[in-house]
Amino acid sequence: MTRTRFLLATAALAALIALPSHRAFAADNDSNKIKKVAGECKTTPPPSDAEVLFDGTEKSKENWVPERSNNAKVWPIKNGVWVADATDIKTKKEYGSCRLHLEWRVPKGRVIDGQKGGNSGIIFMYRKGWYEVQILESHSNKGTYADGMAGSLYNHHAPLVNPSLPQGEWQSYDITFTAPKFGGDKKVLSNPRFTLVYNGVTVQDDRELTGTTLNRGSKLNYHPARLPIALQWHKDPLEFRNIWIQDLEKDTAQK
Ligand code: MG
Image (cartoon, rainbow, N blue to C red; front, side, top):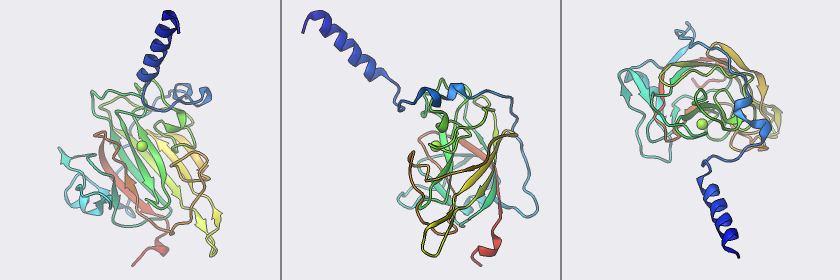
C-alpha cells in the first residue's frame, strides 16, 4: 500500500467511526423531508369517563409499575413534572382499544443526535404486542429516519407532517388505538390501528400496523386482548404531565 493510499484508507476509517451512532436510513425515509407545520400543545382536562393515569401527584404514580425485569422505581416527580428515569414503566391496569391523552416535553439544553438525546415513546400492548408511538426531539433534530421521528409509528409509518415544538415547550399527543383482534386459532382477524393528533395536528389517520414496531417487516404476534401501556426509558430525561385514558372496551375489562 502506498503512503497516499494508506492515508486515504485511514481517513475513510476515521470518517466511518465519526458517523452518528444511529443507523443509516434511505433517502426517501429522511425526517428532513417531512413538512414542518405549526403546532400547539393541547392541554385537555380529563373528560368525565376518563381514568387519570398521571396528574402530577404521588398518588397517581400508583397507577404505574416499573418494568418487570428491572429493580428501578417508578419515575420521580420534580416540580409536578414526571421525569423519565432508569426504567420503562407500565400501567398496572391492562387496556385494549383506548384513547390516550399525554403531554410531554424535552428539557432545554439536550444535545440531539438522531435517535439520541430526546427519545422516549408510548408502547401499547406491552410487552407481548409492542406497538410504539415514538416520542423524539424532532424540532432541532438534524435528521433521523422519518419512521423514527416524533409522531411516527416506529419503524412503520412516518407522520404526515411535523408539528414539533422546541425543547422546553410542552407538546400533546391524543392517540386513538384500535387493538388487534385474534381468532380462537390465534390467527390475526384485524391489525392494530392508530390515529395520532400531535399538537392539534393529525399526523396518523387510522393507520394500520402489520407487525410489532420492534423491527421493520415484523409480523404480528398473538397476544391477549388487554395488556399494559408503557412509557419508554431511552436514557433521556423526558418529562411528562396530564396523562389520561378512555377505555373503549370496558365490557372486556377485568372486574
Ligand atoms: Mg422511542
